Image (cartoon, rainbow, N blue to C red; front, side, top):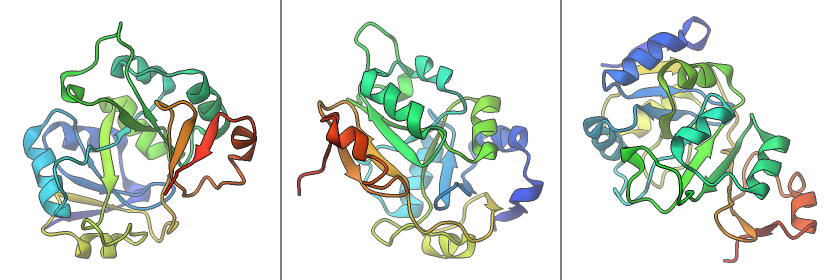
Length: 213
């Protein structure tokens, strides 16, 4: 059985400790509910794939608590990424970045050509990442069923129990926007809470293009 905690009573240091122990935690974001785990813990990652019935070739995004934590990930925080981050971070924009060839990366990112990184507007999540380091976060729903903005719906969607549920009430139904800045020009891979109108200045400048279907 999952232990439920109100977001008003949640403690970032405690959540970080749970993740370090291998827990799987449902957390609220400024968009939809997510499944959080500590990177590098194989058993936790396997549980997430099983809970979502998701193929293992889908890599999990990373949450940071400060832009300075990007350096520890070895990512190529290029000019377009910096300008997008300056405009929309913290907030519901996920940036898919490549890696710098001259910078080491954590072992748990080995084999990836890129990593999706989010610097969320929700202070609780930023505080968790500051307390325990960057963590992995994916939407809390069974694969292919759509993101959930109510904690109970997220729980009921999954194929099994998580360890903890941080209930933040009814959230936005719209997920984060994903822009792949590894590509040039950058590509909008998923339109979400950051809208096309929000990105118009970047589109007009030719820095960002719409995904080609």
